[in-house]
Amino acid sequence: MHPRARVHADPAMELDQIDCLPDALVLLILNKLEDVRSLGRCSAVSKRLNGLVPLVHDVYVKIDRVVAVDGDADDALNLASPKPRHIFSHFLKLMLFTIVKPFHSIRNPGRPPLFPHLAQHSPVQVLRSFSQVRNLRVELPSGDVGTEEEVLLKWRAKYGSTLQSCVILGGTLVERKPTGAAGHEPSTDDSGSMPESFYTNGGLKLRVVWTISSLIAASTRHFLLRSIINDHPTLRSLVLADADGQGVLSMGTEQLEEFRENQLSASACSNRTQVPACSMKLKYAPYLELPGGLALQGATLVVIKPSADGTSGCHVSRKETEAFVSGAFDGPFRFAAKALMRRRTYLLEMNGF
Image 1 (cartoon, one colour):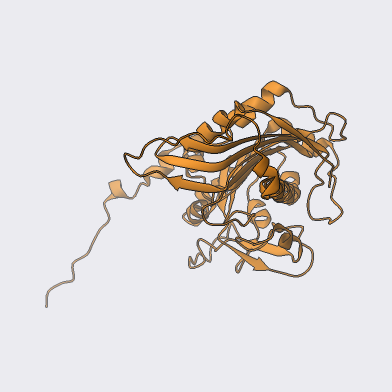
Image 2 (cartoon, rainbow, N blue to C red):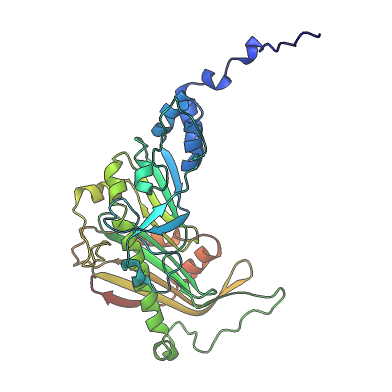
């Protein structure tokens, strides 16, 4: 009978190299990771990581799906299901965004879980596991405003306790030009003035709908961030975007401080921030050729800021607004925004709602 072979561990291999790294370096690595699911998996690896993960500064939360719930939605992000055909459907029911538990199958009876919510939990609940968040990015599963497939609608909004700046870029059709196609011949209506047809064929009405819908979407997102902001006094940067790239709400250090110092003004529907009285600059081009072989028909840029006589309590300079608009979009859409900024300006006023 042959004796059983014994396997002996090499003493040199028993030392975990990760344990040799100082906490500051491990935290630096975890901050590069950002994703809350990955951080959750790391927290289940060891007691040391379980204690370090809640101290990370940079966190990214991706929301996968939307589940309807009844009752108070103070800890929920209260938007409608993906791609609603009408923006006001956002206010017909309360929604709870849920995140699939990243380590639901991990069993570690000797250590309490970093995220104790087993079935479904809102971003507010997940983020309460972190105590030192400085830079937070939340991504929704889709945009808020339903549009036709080839219609372009993008918006960017900056908020403090209320709206500070918003820019909307839209187009009735995004098309790709065939390779080698001749350049577009300027329309006889493209003199820099708004064509008469813009008023008679519903063009202006469509832009008003885009503007109101985008402002409602932004104010809804803003209102639902209040619990996160109140729970995390260490926040310096907060971005709430969506996977479609349609809308982005951002708040920097100054905006977050202003949010905490001023009372939030809710709208009559009570589940979004009130939009203040605003002045709007609308710029239009019937056709724009963009880099990368793209073209945009019915190109429209709307720049929005609170009226000077409004009660928003914030004052944004013209230079700050122009810088915000020029950096709002990426790629060919940044080109479109800059091109439209050179077009004739049409002034509009809107009451608060």
